Every structure is written in structure tokens, then in C-alpha cells.
Length: 249
Image 1 (cartoon, rainbow, N blue to C red):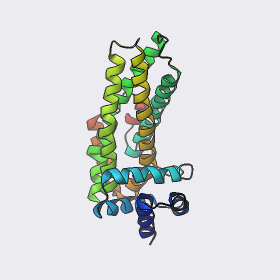
Image 2 (image 1 turned 120 degrees about the vertical axis):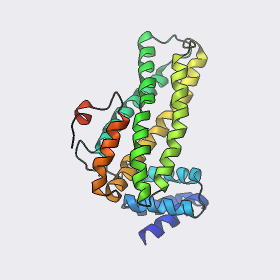
Image 3 (image 1 turned 135 degrees about the horizontal axis):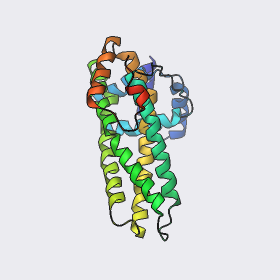
């Protein structure tokens, strides 16, 4: 029943003209929603004809409603694949915060300091290095969810990975260009920051609070050691804490 009610609310969020009333209804229902139930509801909506982009927009709306109400309940040992991904999320979020702060402060009419340019170079490089984080999810974690019949959330996360890859690549190319002293550089940097920061922040929130808890519930315990082995084979980011990846289960 909870799943059916949730699906109905998500349908109403897409089509209702009385959005404030629907949002209030959704807020009440989503306050105690089980992550796996939410994942299954999203998946069934996809099967009923929702496009991935529609569901992605709905996901952003109901996560806004959930913001501040979901506590990160995922509990895993420090060597667990989920714990590794969460630790990497903390590092990625730190780089996003730095990018946002720099983009806001830059003046198009003032030459950026070498210190600022160096920081931007590191940030853009680290965001690209997060590719191994995404690859471990896509190649090792998501297929296990899909084998359990949970295909909607991994599909949406892959869609966002592809979208963000293009923006992060554009950021790195901009920072590495020879146009750092031109006003257009600051404009383009702000545009990329204004997209990457909120989009990737929302993505991290969805994975931490919906996809990862769902995975811990759905993936058989015996699979996690194999997932960890695949993680090790794919490799880690330079910002992945060494204390974690050098420790085995």
C-alpha cells in the first residue's frame, strides 16, 4: 500500500495544477518512506511509461521535500564498498564547495591570482578523477541491484553520470585554456559551477540516502566481498582515503 500511495503522489507531482497541496501530501508520506520502497516505486513508474528525464525531475522534487528529514542511516564497516563510496562523496563535496566559493568571488574585471588558478586546476582534476568512483558504481554495484530487479535508480544515476561527465570535462578544458584573464572565462566558469555544484550535490544526496541504503537491503551479503574485489581491480581516486582501501575485510 505504501508503494502504491507513493506512486500516486509522484504521478500527481507530475500532473497536478495544485502543486503546493501535492507537495504537502508528499512531504507527509515521504517522511517515513523506506528507500527500497521508493526505488521500487520509481522503477514501476518507468515501466508504466514515465521517461527517465521525467522521473529524474520528480526525484529532484521529492528529494527537496525529503531534505533535512532523511538521516544517513547507511551503516557499513569502514572496509565495505558502500563506506568507501561514502567517504569519496565527502571529498567530492569538499571540492564542489571550493569551486562554488571561488566562482562566486571572482571578478570578471580583476585578474585571478595564481593561487586561485592553482586551486581551480586541482579542483577540476579531482572532479575528473571521480570517474573511477562512478565506474565502480556502474560496473560493480549497479549490476547487483539490477539482478535483484531494481533497475530504475541505477538507470537514473547512470544518466546523471553521463550528463556530469560532459560538464566536468568542459570545466577542465576551460581551466586549462589560455583564456583565464578574459572576462568570458569568469562567465563560463560561473555557468559550469552553477550547473555542476547543485547537480552533483543532489546526485550525492540521492545515492547516500536512497541508492546505497537500497543496495544494503537488496544485495545478498555474499556478494559484497566480490564487489570489494572488483572495486580493487577497477582502482580508486587519489582522494580515496588510503586507510580504507589498504585495509581488507
